[in-house]
Image 1: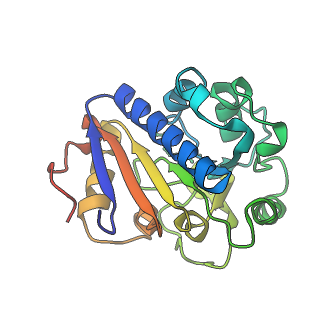
Image 2: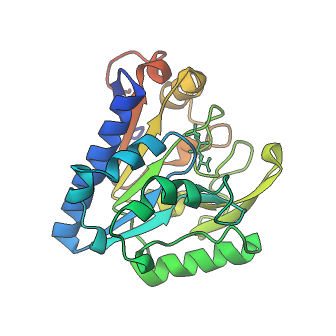
Image 3: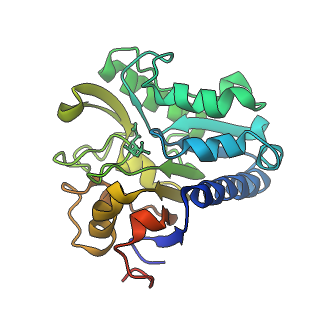
Length: 247
Ligand code: 6PG
């Protein structure tokens, strides 16, 4: 393990999904037994869908203490929760509605509200649930082909407002307002797990893990948790990285 984390490479996306589900379940079991609660922030996008579907079925479903699990989100598009672009909707369809989570344990970013208001409200909900300095047991993230993660996109300084836990951001290239956890909120986590799949991510993953550190060009490089940082990649995404510990 070094400051860029530990990279595990899998032959196929299916194997990445299985490894994400296993890490999710093992982390949940450990957190619940040690601290009586499992606090997780889910990733959006498409990569995590397969892992969420595995978590909704045995054996993983039955390993996870859903009644002691608090579900948050790493980011959200500023759309209503029933919009097909909603990260909440994706996770709800694939997982949340299919397991025995108490409704009050799912903390949705309110994409339908004015962004600034929604960001402030989410930070307050985070602190009300996890304490003034919230610490996730697990934060799941993905990575875009441009090196963005959550809704931390290239060109904006990810560390701009360190004191904030949640911020709203207008993403020019997507012509969309979004809500996102800040690096401060993510980096307090005990474990961060980033899942990256596909040839379209290869160049960014190689640059992020082996090139110079430039968090404005590659915001995902601002993710340096106090705890563990794992990258789970399929062969297609990791082909540009020699199979040795990341130096
Ligand atoms: C989102 C995600 C975003 C995602 C990456 C990768 O709201 O889209 O939070 O950061 O993880 O864009 O997306 P894919 O998994 O779809 O490639």
